[in-house]
Image 1 (cartoon, one colour):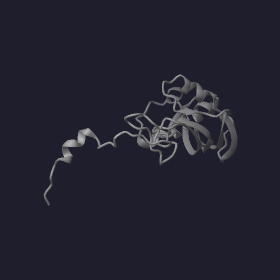
Image 2 (cartoon, helix red, strand yellow):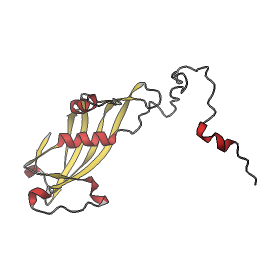
Image 3 (cartoon, one colour):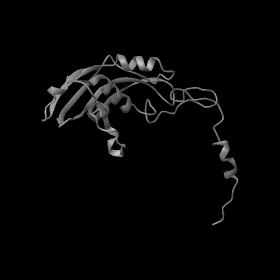
Length: 178
């Protein structure tokens, strides 16, 4: 979706639209890690306005995504319902302003140039930022047995129970006096 910069008002305007998940699926299909699959479309609620040349966007992303559990390696579906916000300022290279050092508060800033804003890459970026760092099918997921690889959520194995991290074995032999 593209928005003409001249059409961005100083008072907030709200729109709801669907953003294609096709580009995100292309990005992930080229990667060796395929932890996520994206639906045909994601719902986007967007509020935008301007203050002088700065453009402000905030809203919410929602959709049902496919994930691969980081513990048991099983596919599962989960709902993405994530708020976002970002600010676009004129590109300093195009406006003649010199580049300035970024501060912590400036990390949500991006630059724009031209007569219109293409929201698709900005929305895609927000979706990628909203993804969990370790997708889990459930908080109680027991994962895979480290010895035989069986999924412990559905079956139990006959492997000996782990005695803990072998690197910590020396600490188990210490006697502390109180």
